[in-house]
Image (cartoon, rainbow, N blue to C red; front, side):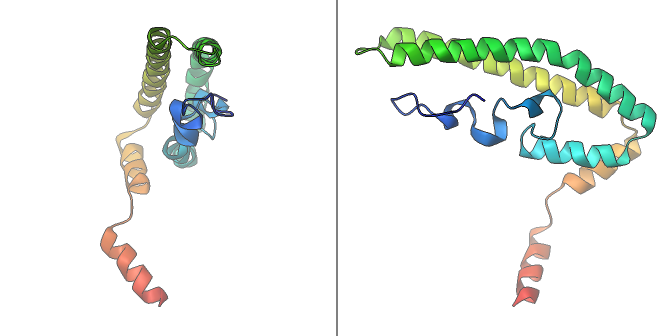
Length: 152
């Protein structure tokens, strides 16, 4: 949503974090929150009780309106920056100021996303958190080497 075609001067998808941290609908708690967060969410959903699912859904519903507003503000800032960059001689100070405001807005979005994630983790039991930690941990490098050797 925040990427699109380049804006000149090297600003394109990567500026807003690319696909893993972009501003897609997944930030609202769906499947595309960012690769790791989405995978964690899938793993979490598998182990939840019906009551926990209901509580998580409530958290996400409470979280969405403010995040949509923040995302709209960020999109407006991006549009303003794009307009500045399309001028024959963009003002470097204006670009820096707009970019700073975008960074601040993006930081607020990320912080809120982390608050939601933490609130969701708070709903888990200690056992569920441990299961999630184990499932989310990368495989041991030795196991990967053995799997590779067995493959050949």
